[in-house]
Image (cartoon, rainbow, N blue to C red; front, top):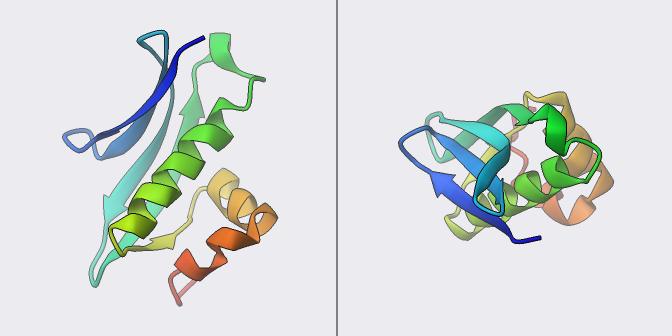
Length: 96
C-alpha cells in the first residue's frame, strides 16, 4: 500500500492518498499572526479504521510546525490527537 500526503494549497487542506486515491484529508484555514485553524478532518468510508486520519493530521502538524505556524484545533479529532501526542503541544495557539 503506497501512502502519500500532499499539502493541497488550492483546497486549503492536507490530503492523504492511498495508491493515488484520495482517502483522507485535514482542512486548514489561515488566521492572523501565523495561526492556522484545523476545523475538520475526514476519512472516506472505504478507508476508515486504518489510522489514516491520524497519519494525515500528523503530517499536517509536522508541515505547519516546519513553517513556523501555531495551530488552533477546532476539530475534535485534531484536538484529541494533540492531547494524545504531547510532542505537538507547543504548536497550540494561546487562545485554545
